[in-house]
Amino acid sequence: MSKKITLIIPTMAIAAILAAGTAQAYGGFGFGHKNIDPATAAINFEAQMTDQANLLGISVDEMKADWAAGKTLSDIAKEKGITQDQLKVKMQAQREAEQKVWLQNLVAQGKITQAQADSRLKAMQDKAALMKNKKALKGGGKFNHESF
Image (cartoon, rainbow, N blue to C red; front, top):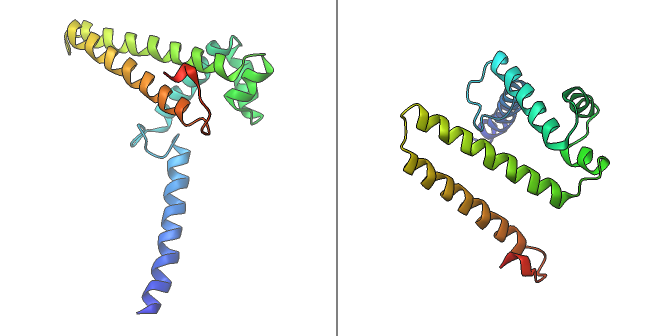
């Protein structure tokens, strides 16, 4: 019986490594990217680079060069004089603008009503505020008046 376990564990580890490598090659681990093909992965990458460049006020080419050099969005923002708090505010504003466009497209296509879109937007905003407050309350036991 111990021989079976000895063989199963390495086999499972190899399978996990292969699955992770395949998933990473296609742009992620399946979180919102199930069965994504290489062409779609490339389109998504380009959109991400464009969004991040716009967020930081730099060119897409500069964003790609910094990404290729291993810099994170936070690293680049810091180099540009953008604080973490400012970056969070910019990202939240960008996310909310994208959500509004997405919901308006659904309304325009007759998939949902304007009332449903308004309700969903409010729910997303409420959830974002709740998450922000939860993170603020976790601030290492420190009292943060902005979290209330």
